Length: 206
Ligand SMILES: [Mg+2]
Ligand SMILES: [Zn+2]
Image (tube, rainbow, N blue to C red):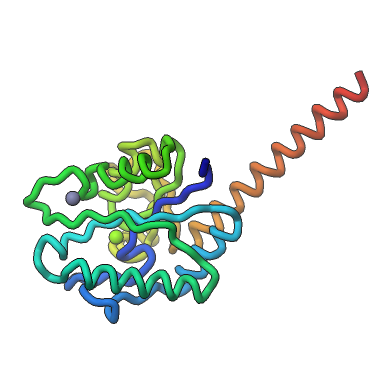
């Protein structure tokens, strides 16, 4: 069973976003350090999945073949730096289809939970848009905002707008999020090792 899972948004989180939509593999370009950051997660034992609204499909701006080509490029570029994304979960619908998977709805997250057979409670989820975090908290994920893409507007602000979940943590980019997560898990591992040591010595002195 997989316990170390991270859920990432795609546009504005891993790759550069565009107001005209990312429509082709050529237009899909990773942000500096993003792929290397995913590789660092993998090397520390984390599985990474993507949850992405792709309403450009529903709007007829590109087709599934083009989306597959974008993801083939992503997987290939990731592989070149030693990284891996397990799967890409995407919503193909336009907003007026009122589906249950377009974030802020939680359908993609529920699909991920089902696929992995796990409760997503406490699973870190990172996105650049409020709706990414709303979808995440609906299934109990830990909400993280990245201040790239749409999130760049919050850079330098001391407080996030009130509609963000109260426990939202903000990071300058994907790489900073990974630094934070790896540091946190290292610290947790250290303190649990210490606790084991303490209980051993307590046992031997008894
Ligand atoms: Mg995004
Ligand atoms: Zn959908």
